[in-house]
Length: 185
Image 1: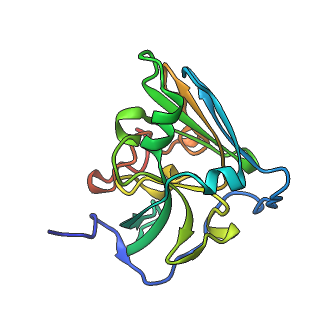
Image 2: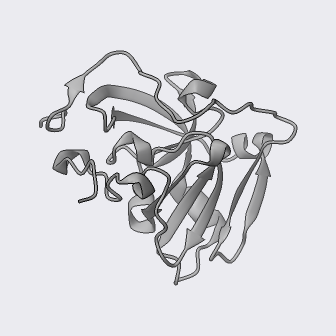
């Protein structure tokens, strides 16, 4: 099976790309929230988040700028485990991911519930560095990396899909690297 999507080039580096400044992480004030159209909203401290069941997954990472990196080992909490915890209402069909630095993205719940979608805090055996999204990053292997939001602080379950930071600026909302869905037309 081909691992490299069309018009991507393989790299062994892990380039750092983001808009704006890397936010400061303060363990004392950091929290994670999951709410919106849910039965049981949650707010967790960083230590409480780390105490949730951890899983590991190895996946490829594809940037919309044209590079891909194979076999990245991510560790964290499955998005589906967060969903089980908060129990989305039947009307919730999407989730908006809100991050430090004002970044957002949104995906259908059906895609976020895939077993390889993680809220990761470990990358290749070490704590996820701030420049790569630490302390917490969304990992959605079947999408371009701009859907893999850095510095995650909140998941809002919604009835309608909201366009995220890059999607509002002309990037594809579906972001499938195998279909080269880079931009909305």
